[in-house]
Image 1 (cartoon, rainbow, N blue to C red):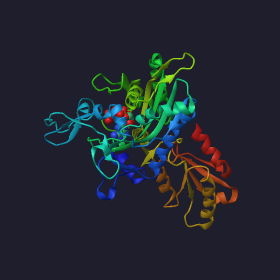
Image 2: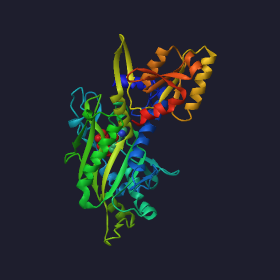
Image 3: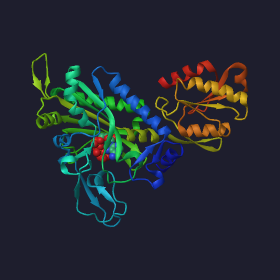
Length: 430
Ligand code: ATP
């Protein structure tokens, strides 16, 4: 884990938040490569779960919502973490994590459990009183439920259908550490899938397959993921059945990567009651009106990124030397290729390499590197997870061919300049 954290900082994936001020616990900023990786993961998710389906509606809702939302959803009362503190080392833990996940290392005596609501409070307007109080959303799901009627009215979808969203969520987390696994501010990728009650078991199974399938498609290894069902004392107040996919993270073994919850008709009923709006679905064929039930696949962007990085991180020995390489699936790799002039002090090579770079950067996300020797550049690009390195040398000036080197096999091929884009695209879509 330490090696991953250090590589992430060195190569511009993830920096500690407010770094020059000594950081701020559980906050992080993405650097240029982390930003690209995050974007690629979100795009892959969106394409897979929204754009390629004909019954999925994507929205992008606000972080601030009418505080009545959180009364109706049960979050003001039911979204509670129970905290205990170690009397010896004064570290705080979530009581539910003591059993299963994070235990005090010093084995000191624990204080009595204290209840705590992890929603961030804020105030709207200039007077900070109760009437101005609201929250930064702790989950994206509720923005979906409050837009359920809008989607019905605009698109008249038939069950089953889903509303999906990628967006920020905020939780005042008190357990520290584990890098981007647990942040105060993170991104969720969530779907509320509206169904008829009688189909929930079938739909639940179907979503399990789809969720697992997507993780495998972005490069996670099946051996490193497993499903775990929540037992009665940990299940959320709105759920009748919840299962998590756990990933074997490089700290403390299997931990929650994402969740799948059967939320019944809890949320729509609650919002209907509290808002006074009719949130029932009308089945035009049978004439019935009812609250649809909901299956909720809920993904975390940062945990997905961490799993991708952990899966990709490899140390290999090459001709007696150690190389560190991020074997990120080329589909989601931050940059698809790097372009090098063989020598940085030969204007004719630089000119040709620039031409290749300028043309290709319009089509693919690539980078330019002319620092140090070729060996050093390969080393840097391997750590950055760039699947292909393209070198422009003296032969290029004669015959318009380049060397293309594969990150994983380190094999080099000679191809024509006008074949580069097709070559990389073919590999990316594999
Ligand atoms: P945990 O028990 O680890 O706190 P949770 O069960 O509270 O997680 P959910 O409410 O199910 O999490 O949220 C859905 C997803 O959002 C999680 O599976 C995870 O990927 C992500 N997530 C939740 N909290 C955080 C956080 N503090 N930082 C980063 N991602 C998070």
